[in-house]
Amino acid sequence: MTQHTLSPVTLATCVEHSLHISLDGFDLSRARLYGISIVDEDGAARNEDGALRITFLAEHGDVYELLEAQTSAIFRMFDAAVVLTCGWAAPIRDEDDDDNETSVPPSQHPERRRVRLVVVVGDCGVGSVLRFADTPNEVVTDAGAARGSLADAVTNMWFDSPINVAQAGQDSALQD
Image (cartoon, rainbow, N blue to C red; front, top):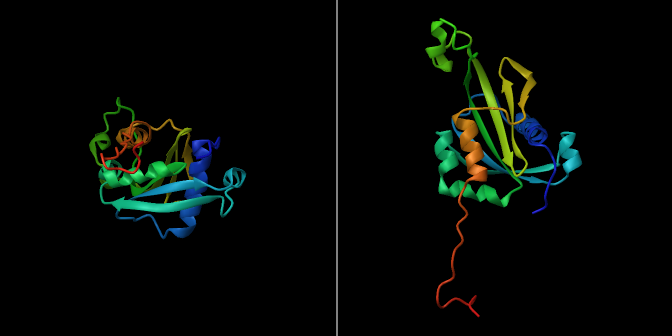
């Protein structure tokens, strides 16, 4: 595999642009995992069609189970992995607020917004792009500063996933 220097957030922006064109809405019922092959690094930086090869790998109703599934390990064959998920987002308040809204799940929050999240992880790090249903022509990017259980799970998937090497048996033709 070729070593690429494209920043994770630039790659995430290109992936999200491509997926946005092909996806219908913000209501995916299952999280998806894709493998990304970079075909044209300069083209990816300009969001050009054909700059990336995006390969669907798996989907699951629970994003964490998707990331932990042994079958998802196929992502290691690619330049980067992408997690796509949809859900509800709500404003994060300071802990000092006496407001009762901090204990309300995002899906029940009065200021909730439907969101689609694309997270890219590869050897250069993690980047993500959010797009909200109520402002679909705008994106919010994060160059790896996101915190929380999903950010940890995606980082661990790429950087801490075990690599299992199959050993040839005694009668193998691979022996000397």
